[in-house]
Amino acid sequence: MSKIIIKTDKAPAAIGPYSQAVSCSGMLYTSGMIAIDPATGILSTGGIKEQSRLVLKNLKALLESAGTSMENVVKTTVFLKDMNDFAQLNSIYAEFFNETPPARSTVEVARLPKDVLVEIECIALMS
Image 1 (cartoon, one colour):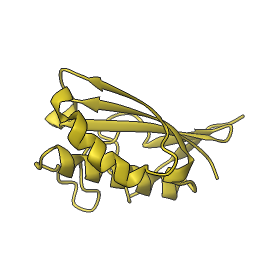
Image 2: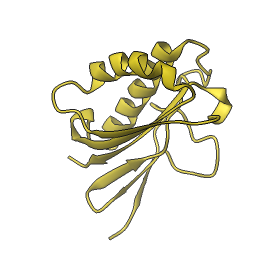
Image 3: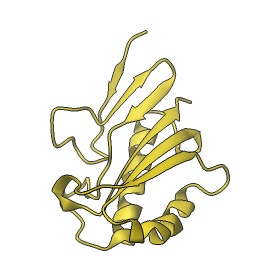
């Protein structure tokens, strides 16, 4: 069993000493994604819906770069700055995970990197 580091310019670059994702034993583990436009490196200043959509688009791009897809996601962890944003997050989340949604944990946290409103990580099966 060896681990494979996944790196793509289709998702935001790591902002610290970590990998965007790691593949091991038929599974893909992503780092938390925040609302940074990978093309420009600019942080989204939009609200929870805009940030959630960009985060999920970034995750989708990362998964596809690794050779898998959103349909293969088995677990997500969502970190919210404010649990009052839960319903708005869900409305965007359902656009990306509608037929067979993965298991999920959602927690409110005191602070996120770059003071974003949401961060999402996932675990997926490799195709």
